[in-house]
Length: 185
Length: 136
Image (cartoon, rainbow over all chains, first blue to last red; front, side, top):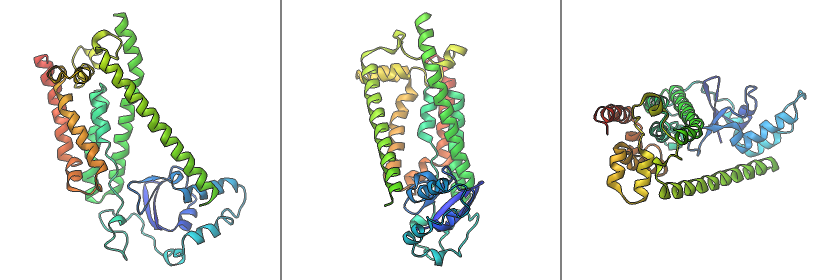
């Protein structure tokens, strides 16, 4: 299995598990995707990468960091030697990153969520200015994705998510106060 | 499967199950609340925008509309907040399109297109202006 990761807004992949493990910047919140996943997730949500992360933590201070982990990654990935020479840095997403498997429909990561449902709900649930910003960013996700600019799509997606969260948090903070005001006046 | 993997999987699924159970309980509680109590009685959250500006926001009236729908009065619900009633089926369609098939279907492409989303945005803005001019 091969993995795609995003470090410092630069997407890298396909990488083998060993290559992912060798990234010094890897942390539990690093965005990761592999074939079969419907969307990007974090490193901590993928069991095999989470296992590497936790073993890194246990061995902190030890200079030979993954010596214990090496056997495990070899076992689970028999093609690692063959794949380790392939690096595709910042590959545009409209194209297929798998040179060898052009017909594999899963090879292109899926479009990031545009959070449109939540953005509409946030707007209707009385936090208009921020809800409208969320809808505005939701509109930018799909054009960027189909243009092949995956990073821009991911950026718009996370901004839409941020404004949805701001809207709902503001609404939830406001709700109890408004009940009190309503009872007083 | 290594012990660490198993631990992570177990914790993840337990957390998810608790979250889903909690959300179901909250949803049922809210339904019962909105079915039995009229939202203008004072114990419900009020709109920040309306309290500050005196104008109606695009969502004003949706709590009364929910109460009216639960009591089978679609006409009253429509008069409280027409846009909200129109957008319920739209939200249903959006949720459905996420869970049926892959994200590459034509429906999914249409619903996430810039044109469609900006259309929704324009509708909401026009609705806000119109309802404040005609006092709907």
